[in-house]
Image (tube, rainbow, N blue to C red; front, side, top):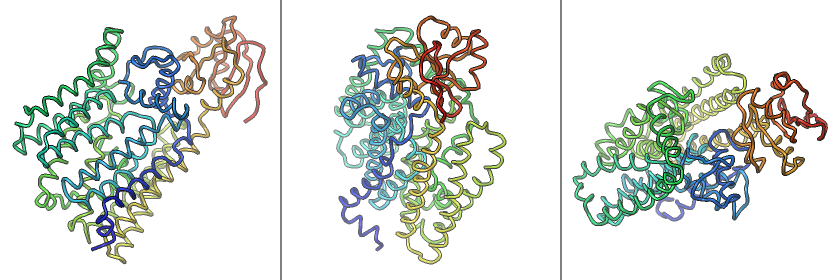
Length: 538
């Protein structure tokens, strides 16, 4: 019996340790960098405008109706703003809480499908995985919808394995709340996975039980009213944008430059699961033995993975965050490998060696990426370099440690340490450094201190989505220099934020010079009148 087994004798202590580690990873420095473009900035501003307008049913962004996403995350964020103030940290708080909550759900699911040891390891893997941690520290919807999908699947397992049909209320309620978080996928995925699992368990009769019927009615009562209100208020505009463009067209067409090959998500998962993706070759190598030992648990995870992965792989528009709901299932699968006898000895050493090789591949890719990626995206190259260094060093050190110690608890602890270091390098090192070069927050704050209430402000080629949040007012967003120059030609006082390289073009189009009020890096704040502070050097 190792240290982990001794720890797990006291379930409360295990949960406390998970909460302490998860809170340290997800909440430390959560507001240290400015809002990211595009979606995080939009959601933060939508929540702010809910408070300003005192209009909570119909979301608005930059003081225009916003039909892109349902409102639950923005509702929660607006409530947080009212209690704790408006900031980057409060805009991200609920995403971090959902990430932490999913970790606890995974711990419970591991106990139901396998044992408490595997559940604990799965929770560690999830909360230290690179993409899960990164998305949990941003005010996005992916972690929230993953929380509700995972919670619904936990409720399904409780209803079946504990013979308590009242859990179908939670199963359907979670799907309804998930729809308000990010749309119908919160019904599609748990519904399909649940149907296939009930067929396997020969429990289809559960679906006509009073509890399941009541749960389905509860789901509709939660999910439908908001959609009906928006349809009544905005008609075709809402249906065409919400369902047409952001669901049907995104799935059937490659839009906004996000068309990727079928294997795209395999690459995303390889990076997103770091450092634990290094353990995947070993887990796959012994998957046959895991199947024989934990048939029902592995089948459930397989249904979970295949249903979600196949759905998004077929879709034409592909983004890394789409497959976030897969990470709980992958964490449980890797934990079933690491936490069982099949994961001991040779295959665990192979896993650390795989992590070492993966790190080398990332380092080798850096020079090639430098030639292919535009300079403004070179931050991502530095990020890949950091991950390559961490993976290489952690993989080699873990392999040597296992050769010397041959103890599972030490191997698991060291893997967690590598993951924490990797996450720390990203969030406390790389991201704040990258944020120094982002001009929207500093320029917006400068403009906000000198503008009069009736002055106008525009943004061109920077921070189109975050500038309204930082300005705390309506910002005109322009795509072309002709639009901006025409707007600046007004006799009213108007400011604009734009790249310094674009100023000459805007002045040429307008036939006049504009006064530079201030600057940050290669970006300017200008005014169309002869007033304001002189340009200061940064």
